[in-house]
Length: 528
Image (spheres, rainbow, N blue to C red):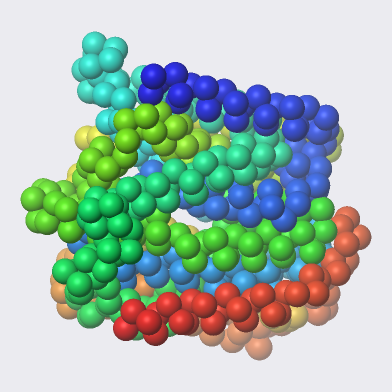
């Protein structure tokens, strides 16, 4: 019964996505890469949230909450503020320039070499880290929920390979052959399912804690575990309070404002109003994120105490313990949708980056739009196969791989954010400044975290990696401004309005943005 429910919901999502996208022109760049620039606010919001939320985050953050409490909610609640900043500052500029990829702006602002370096950094991050980890963690979750090894009568390793390839093939069909609109539509449907399914876990968990009463369950949880309800972390926690004002906001701004896999949904908006509505709607829902990715971890701590060897076991064990058997198939299908979303969104963005920024720019400059899309699809197919081959091998990697994901991403996130911010806020900083900043950012961060921290100063005596990100962000901005002072561009940069979409801002933008900021601030004050 569980398996039938799982298959039925998954096929329903695929059918609706096919019906909704069959009239989209997939042979044009806008049609394939940006859904024909036709996405509305609700679709954008749903796709943003599902692209972000996947198994490694649901399991990982709840594991962190099991260990440290609600202070890890910073990864969710502060994202809302970053989305507001993106809606107010970055999105109007993106849509004014009519760009398809973030590196396209860098070519217009600096030069083609800067664009290519940035695209290569994005692609390396997707290929080496993001895609294989999403596949591996997703396959692990599905294997555990359905006990695939026993179901198929194979070893755990063989089951892992089978599930990885199953997820990869289905995700590739969405991303490569359906384009952005298929990804966005399927994401929107799965977003509703994930919100419902994700909220069911704390719902049934609190009922169990409160012996049939949710309010009593919450009271007991807060009374018996007061240390888990402190929003500000100490110096030895994973998120010391000071990092909220330094690297944390920079990471959030990079992720929600410049990461191609995320912001591409907003690039596909039918106009600026819809794009801003989508970002702000997503920011409101993101504030509720801790109910799905933090609260269950605390409930698990209350129920299981310190009996778990690995905190990442907290969420799967809680699902098994509190969720009625009849709902397991539905929840697994929703979780499967979240896995697919993160995989196919990153893959679709990789296809876009390769087709627009590498193939058409360097391999075949006179390529037609149809040829560009075809080349992107072939590259995506190769990328998917490589990811599916690499993912099962992660099982043999050293412990702590997922814990270092955010830290490793700093190698390219802060340098890219630096040159984009300086590019929009200045007119005379030249291309050479961007090249130096992006290369120095990657090199200095790598030396800092992977040489100085472990081998010179030691883990306990070194600044938190989020502080290091903030220091390098400021340093690279200074480097760029100094170069701009002594070797400025011959002509000031002026952004040209391409008129591809209407860029009239949403009239309620400021009011809603301020409301989001005040709600986040209120949450932190309440849980001090």
